[in-house]
Each structure stands twice: as C-alpha cells, then as structure tokens.
Length: 73
Image (cartoon, rainbow, N blue to C red; front, side, top):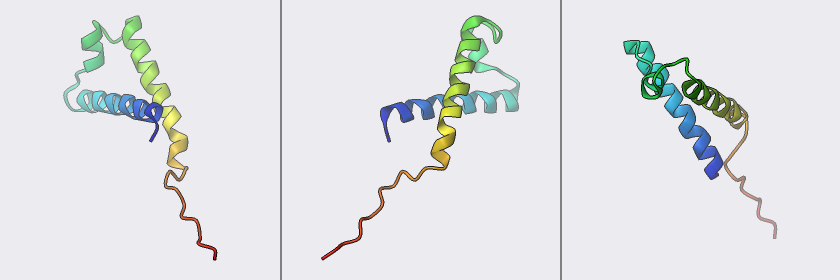
C-alpha cells in the first residue's frame, strides 16, 4: 500500500471516529479541537477528510493483490 493511500486511510479513519463519537455522545471532537465546528479550520479538516474518503472509493473495486503468473515451461 502506498504512503499516499495510507494517509487517505488514516484521514478516513479519523473522520469515522469523529462521526462515531458524535453519534454516540453528540460531541464533535474536530470542532472542539479547532474551537468550533463552523470555523474555517474545522471546515477545512472536514473537507480534507471527505475528499480522502472519496479518493478511497475506487480502491474498493481494484484488486491490490498481485496476480500469480502461470508457469510456462
């Protein structure tokens, strides 16, 4: 897995954890860390996390495992 894809996955996981915390306790961790969920920094983080998740969608349909080459003699 490339470093870029790992970064995308990390951002998507952070977003998922934030949504989970929000869904269970009604607490927006990103908004709290940035001083409000509607300020420019929080909105930028939300956009970056959303774009990361969208960039990962095609990987759901790609085969990352190298295919075994048939042996020819």
